Length: 298
Image (cartoon, rainbow, N blue to C red; front, side):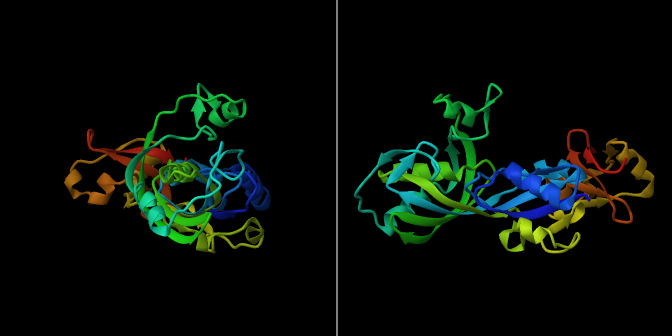
């Protein structure tokens, strides 16, 4: 079974544990996720099985949407509710408008410094392992894009927000930075990932749901081709199939005849005349050919 599961991860389990549960339920040999969720977070975790694990990088690069609750007045060492409180503002007078203005200042392309409590690595060592030893290392700010950030509810000290953002965005850090901007400190109190690209939380499955789920096409269960339907496709002729399944590039004599989305897209679904997904390719304008990134049929 080469599937992509739109899983609704429960709270207080790691993404790795969630993948292990899916493997057990579906009885598959291989599985992996396409973008970590912290143990405290719930929501959408895409789990890929068998050959579909090779598609994980394409899903992890998609934009994300989150619903988050931050608590004002307390900053923690992990920037979330599981950390130790390192600063506290007992009394503060902040109105809804001030919060909206602070949040709005992060909208657009910004630089964000990754937190120490993250899976990013420094000299081969995950940062969170160093953080647990009390070691802090320099982290270069990375460019992210906050497409939209909206205040959903205001009930001090709790503020609920919805964030649409690019990959690599740390909502914990966004909350911490908001607290700093407001001058009172803040941390992430609750987090739910509600979307990854076209995948929505409304169409997800809990691990319990997955036990009685149907096959590809049923709620939360996708074939590789269906899960990649956001990517443009190219049906090739019978004579080209052998080259594709051996990973050879396809020479394009006249690129002007290719649709614009094939040329500018993040990838191309290469399909047989009958519609079977053979590979994921990418157009190279420099060499006017389509290179094979991932081949499924060998």
